[in-house]
Amino acid sequence: MTQHVIVLGAGVVGVTTAWQLAQAGFSVTVIEQESGAGLQTSFANGGQISVCHATPWANPSTPMKALKWLWQEDAPLLFRWQRLFGRDFDADLWRWGWQFLQQCQSINADKNLVQMVNLGLYSRQILTKVREQTHIDYDCLTKGIMHFYTDKKEFEQAHAPTERMRQLGCDREIISVKQAILLEPALASCADNLVGATYTALDESGDAKKFTQELAKHCQNQGVQFLFNHQIERLLFKNQQITGVKVVTEQQSQVLTADKYVLAMGSYSPFLVKDLGVHLPIYPAKGYSATYPVVDKDKTPYVSLIDDEYKLVYSRLGERLRVAGTAEFNGFNLALNAVRCQAISRRVQQVFGNVVDFSQPNFWTGLRPMTPSNVPIIGRAVNAQGRIDNLYLNTGHGTLGWTHSNGSAKAMSDILLGKKPDVDFNFVGLT
Image (cartoon, helix red, strand yellow):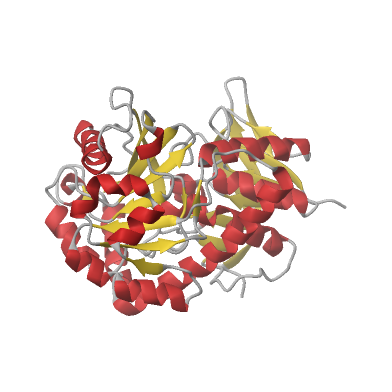
């Protein structure tokens, strides 16, 4: 008898999970509060499948940088002081921040890096297979990712992480300014400020929203049912088992049931399982992006770039340039901050000049579900009484939801089939 699985959430993680479950023979229903797939965190992210340039935010150098940036409105990493000390005091942020500091220790940061790279390499392989299966057009570019540096000290400090990445199976290499410009001629505009770069030929880029929405169509063709505009109110729970999902629409409230349930609701995941005694260390990191129409095609980069000084990424998406980055810890506030938006445009102009139309920026902000370690939570849900029989977790992907989504989804499919996933990763609740 075919088992029915409900996937909670239709972002890139939820939709890739639905696809892999459908491929494995499950009957699948996806529940989403928005009117379509990929309309929240997946909507306008940086676009990078960044396996070999993704290091944990929690590392030994971060605490001092965070303190330095504390009062800087356009800082790459910004903790809102009101939530730390003021009238909007946020106990969840304090708790998360303390756990984050623990993960900044060298030994923990390296363990987390290993997890992130292992899952990333696997996920990139699965993405290639999905692309071959579906032939989805999502402005994919397989021209690699380059991390460029304008500070000599930061570039020198990048040598050790690059070597560590190579030890873990990445093809990342240190290159000169001349090599960087040969690979991406658009960098010639800021050549005088460059001190070096690192490059990975096998990393890639593409529009996560387009991919998610197109894959959702393929899922529907495979029989997956999508219930959009359904607000998930709570999980019904009895005897260590989920007995249903209470959802609300404009017309009615109802309970939907399945054999198994997969939680893929990003930053909102902790709220849904808190009453079950499941505590997920996930806090929303507000990220910004700007999307510009390309004016000068030849001088706008095709290689996806990481700007170390400003912690921004640049991805060419057809006739658009997507620039994204920064992390602001400000609860679930989604308001656009003009200072942070203007800082993105200012930096793009500094690096490349007037290669895009700055009069028509499309600014966006989304909440990235960050764990203190930057490692996602994938596996079985567990509370003080033990494993919950039919609840599975695929959440907490932080800044790497697009990078890790396909591998996470395939691993989740294997777990529901009772198989050991084909990736060396610390899945939760399996032992």
